Length: 517
Image 1: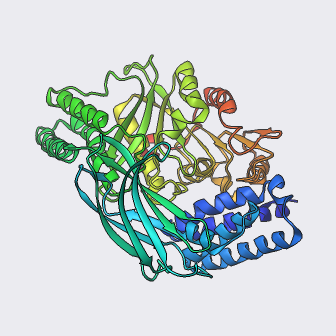
Image 2: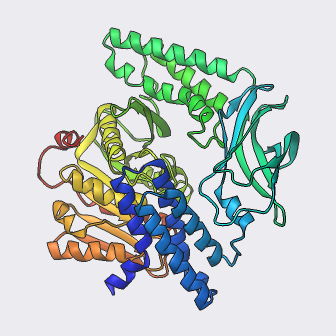
């Protein structure tokens, strides 16, 4: 039974292991994300019930081809086979136009622009097509509003485009018109002979003078940090990266490295300058803050600013020790997810009620699986929080959902003397035998028995191994629960579990936190 259930997600697991071995390169991480969506669809009975035996066989064949391509490092081909299989499961014909639509990419050389600025645009493909569309393509490039795709202005039309955008990518330059400040989308529509048009988007933010204002703030932050360090005001200097991260949002967005649909750039800039004002006056801007807010630190891994989300309960008193929870988001999420998305803030409601500080690392890329540099980020955030707040070393806890559930197991196994208790949700581990490393840590496991994304057997085998090893373990298997529905409703159980446990013996948490770099 166990073997059969594990085989249901064989592709996802195989790709996961391959991605981990390659340090989750960007292309491999994209395959991992798509494979999770594929596995979810294939493990949904209602989806598979609609397929004919021939279609099921073709889906299985494409899965095998995707697995082989991924193993050879041919990530584009792996994506092609996965997208093809998913189209079949949706009941869609895999036409040349549909294949082109899945393969097509639109990239801009920068995405933060002043009105009137010219931007370079490149249209390419993720993978080669088995069958190219007939004839030449024609492109229409327009600027549209973020919501509703209402046309703002047609920017350029181009005829006689080669249908092989992998060998002959389309390059063009377009000028941004005079428009109101805000986010827009550059829409590239390809007209395909004998097929529906193919359209892809790239988001841009257009605002006059924004670049200059962020440049000024960046210079100010660098000078202030240097001055504080020169005066040995280390505690104040440690707060500068949190302001610098807000300032860096402009450059990250300009390079297309973050999704900025919901970012208020002026608000971030004003907040950064307010923080710098406080630091210039010799005041830590975070000392009085309670509730949810963002901090950041400078990572020694690659000298990048890494953000993390904080929650400090209203009753926090620095003269007393407080418990800390490190919460790890799922794939595709970020540092904001645990406190904002799950149950619309249910986790911070429980944290306030029980009096917990919470820190949520970004974990590098959204498909990092919390290994390598992403694992170090988790432990670096823990060290940052312990430096800034009075944390009880015997009451440091770790929880996470989905990818974060996997991370809860793996990070605890690599740092077995740090955490007082664990609470992985909808997760699992690649090698249950390694649970012997954390046999002394009380663990609450939550999983739905109808989870199509991470099969419930991934938690069942961990629970079985834990019981075999004599771990104090509580298992909540939710009848009919899927991948996401089991999360927020079990937050009260997570806090009750943490309330009931303190760290058992072993080396001091502070030493352990820095024991593995």
